[in-house]
Length: 309
Ligand SMILES: C[S@@+](CC[C@H](N)C(=O)[O-])C[C@H]1O[C@@H](n2cnc3c(N)ncnc32)[C@H](O)[C@@H]1O
Image (tube, rainbow, N blue to C red; front, top):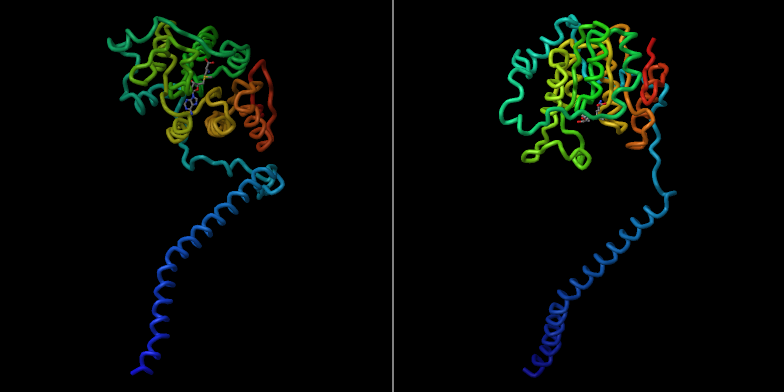
């Protein structure tokens, strides 16, 4: 019996020890996990810090091909373009496709709009530059596409010039008529209704005020989707002016899409070759486009012209 009690003592102790170990195991595990998490967090944070502060650790992506090896086909924007509709059917084609075959100027302005627009509010940038006269005299365009119209200053100037030359020209003005974020800081008198600016209505009113509603049409959509649709519908032009978004990506996209819409002998030109806006995005896009295609750039005042002859 005694022997058995002595035998039991170590067992008893063993149980107590394992009980204590079990009791401590949980907090120790938590502590170790916490330590591990903290250490890993510290290490990863310091390695991020190193990457941003040491430019030498940045990876430089190597271009897969050189610019001169690229072809316009690499930048294709849609596969389907139709044969051109005759110039004298361009206006009706647009009315049918966009306006249920009815001019948007019929009964303009409706009551709910007339209180929102001023009788005339025209303003732009370099919108009367000599380039318009030079190109219209040279090309004698039947169709002009303007990419970026705003209040219509340059469109109205072109409409006047074509009229003076006795041409019957249709001018298609592609603009989403949203301006750009914050544009009303400068153009406070363009009204806004529930967050919607009335830029298109003011543009239309401007055309009414100069009696040019038969020669000009607003195309109130994004430039990318509109120019692709024009190609699909066979709506091409003799003169195309690019003056919408000024960052490289916008200008590059507009220029490439617009070029496909030129009729034989047509001319592509645009504004803001010299502007510093958006890191000189327009100039970079024009230069790259000319280089990729082997075209020359001609400068006329603030405007660029692509010489594709
Ligand atoms: C500089 S203004 C055009 C000025 C006009 N050509 C003139 O001289 O009077 C640029 C216009 O492009 C339009 N625009 C910019 N990006 C556009 C886009 N992606 N789609 C449609 N319109 C756009 C703006 O709404 C704005 O009215």
